[in-house]
Image (cartoon, rainbow, N blue to C red; front, side, top):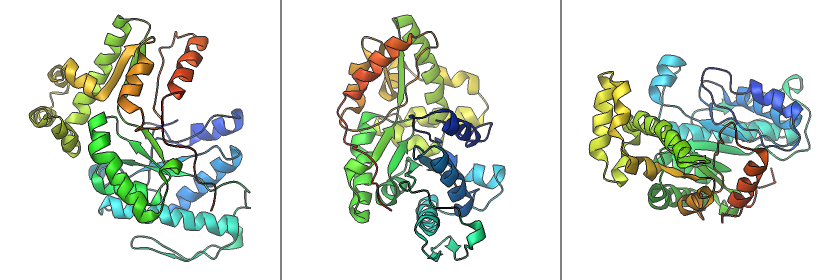
Length: 318
């Protein structure tokens, strides 16, 4: 799994596609709007072909400031635009795989030209699954309606999953005629583990800084509000405007950290994860300390895989 930060999000996956045989490959996430749907379709197509069907495309809209001032593109309401984007992607893929005429006419994207020279050979593989990052209610509905999964933000709690995320996605699934068993709810929140309490405490400090950073962004204030943390969110935002980044983590208590993180030693973490995600989320991100024995990692992963979840697999059709 890669992230679009200081380096290209797809290049490492191209190497991994050729060097591995079993693992799933995904960007978490690739910023959608700076790339046209056809450009994104081509990158995803080659990764799917070279990995023999192990690629999952993770997309996100990013926020207005990054789109306008980092990527230099115009901004419009992101939820309907990303909905249009995903449908345009699939129109291109169906053109290439099934030989359908490209004639996509959406609100934001119109794609009507695809000659043989620009069409790759059919892969004989399933269509690339598309998941999107979603926080707000409109984007959560889009995820449920037209996508194969959702990538929840790290600033995520069980209460947010139950009260906001899952109900809005269910609305979208009903609208799009999609099944929950074929929809992957990825993560949300943090996981902190280690061999002893000191290691866990050290990991919580990293989470404390991340919660302070995310909590300073006004877009995430509704999540804090669910837990009566409006005052904290407003204070963190004010401190960020004043440039007091180094002081912000001190405002986040252990109690707040544990709202957004499953924390526990190796003996405890599977139970902590089940208490937070069991029956709600299907996939999580889990990082082990660098000195964790491979056998221990396998044992913990086996325990975590026993946690109940609804996802059975992506829809195989086109």
